[in-house]
Image (cartoon, rainbow, N blue to C red):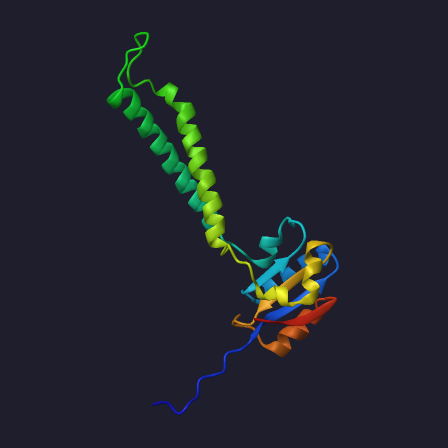
Length: 184
């Protein structure tokens, strides 16, 4: 039996800073990355080129998933065409050989694209944790402005470098409009 009582579970998701411009958000993301924070995320109304790099996100799993699925699709398409034209229904049309691979190119390409597209959709949904009808950032009343003209940066409380006071001062030092605590 332990003498230590379990630590109470924190209800804090993290801190969220609000910025007026895309440029301010990018600079803040670079500063957060350079400071060594790992559990961060940025929110804007439109995609921002270079935002993933500014946050230090180097996740290339979706590219690998799509490449493997495309390769699998091309292989399945080629094997299907070979089976149809050589094994199941061999027909000599115009004296051409049964294994006439140039005719396989369009179906192989199409199955490759089909497998790649489906894997991209499923992979993105799985890796992004969809469907997720609720996220703690929705607790910030000003977060609804992220869909119009504001930019937000959050640092999660489970980040190894997170300390509520020093992280708040750090975010305030990035010329943010406002820094708020976000509850789970």
